[in-house]
Length: 386
Image 1 (cartoon, helix red, strand yellow):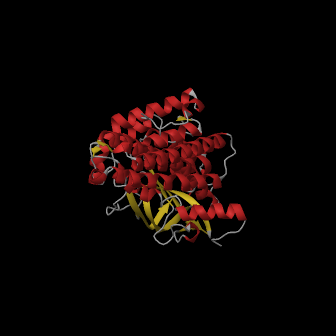
Image 2 (image 1 turned 90 degrees about the horizontal axis):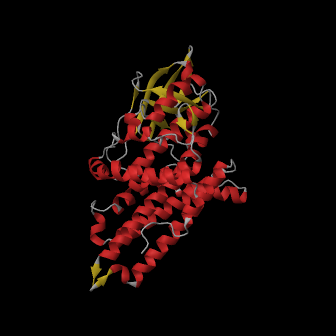
Image 3 (image 1 turned 120 degrees about the vertical axis):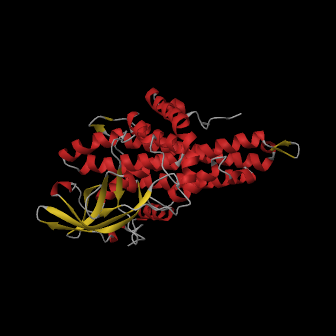
């Protein structure tokens, strides 16, 4: 009986290092994170003890080089995201924000002083970051942001509000996007800066083990050197989102694998009408469909990773992967929940937790519908959002 989801023997297409990274992270999640995650999901808290351990293992900004960072290839980075989300979306979300949305913009758009100040600390987990782009009235349309930056002497004055910010309340530094003279620029806002606050959002029924916050900027004064000098317009935060969406495509695959494995094991062991549930045709049809979709997503992720490592990846290809894999994972989680019957709604099993988390993953970093339109524009040359 299949116990590991690798029906097409993709291990053969991974290097020794890639397999070692995946297996190491899988063991780490099983030993250090999985035993904690249910209680944190119940309490609505993040397992902070995992942060320095993730940093020590090189899981934060793993595909960035220099400044003490691992410089792993992008397939290895994707496999890290996959294994973190097999545990819980909150783990992958933390690492994704820290690496792709905080460290990457500093790495790509920051000054040398900013890189030396922040990248080693963020990579080791000694500091935590967040990414302030989404606003209460501008989620799918970031170009409509109202947050403003004004020049004030040698520094800047920031005013505005950001919403649904992962890591916000625990962050030591926020990458805040604001319009300066009508152009979107990135700024580093440090915790404790007068006028800057990050109240936590506690009413969530999804991603409960993740810290989600609002960012409030009321006459926040920052020095001139806190501007990310190479940021220039909406394309800068969108480049960061492309990095994050790449990891999400792999992470959602991890959630789907966890749900499939749990449903398979449960239906083999659970008997009704004198025989295992897995012996019934309808159950086997569901398992076959789930395996097929996971295998397709695995092939998609691996090819996307190889394209990224070759410098040939396009952002629209990332949209296809995020759109497909997250919706696929959500459908598999829903199906698996049903296969576990009443037991599937308890947190003794992981499927309901994954299902609830994936409702958020399906929404953030571009909804299914937004990625549909991104692909539509790429195919037709016509912008449906214009």
